Length: 179
Image (cartoon, rainbow, N blue to C red):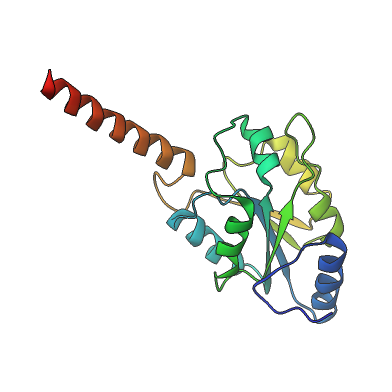
């Protein structure tokens, strides 16, 4: 098992072995998950803050299929999962990256990553999970820490909506000038 930090791990059982080795060494394991679509400053501040909470940061990346199910939007993700995982690989604060695809047909996460690695801490943002989901997460993680968003107006959805609105306004202004 030769795995280096900043690695994309393709299999939960492989990640479990790696994390068990870290736990044996006394490392505090922190885990977070998300879509990480169009990586932006809010994401990076959040990841750096999550890493400060422990020794090893594992980042779960929602699969393209999962995002379509829980966001209920065929237009998302904007960036394919392989590229989102690779972008995270280059972030110094991220130790391991793994794809999350255990989303049921209603868009609910089944927590297989957490069941497998049993992190010391799971980190989330204020509006990412319902109270019920936080209770479920606490079944598999020793603790849950919820951060506020790390930058104003940086949700990927808000960025996309602002960009589309600005482009439509510019197009409309251009066409009304010609009339």
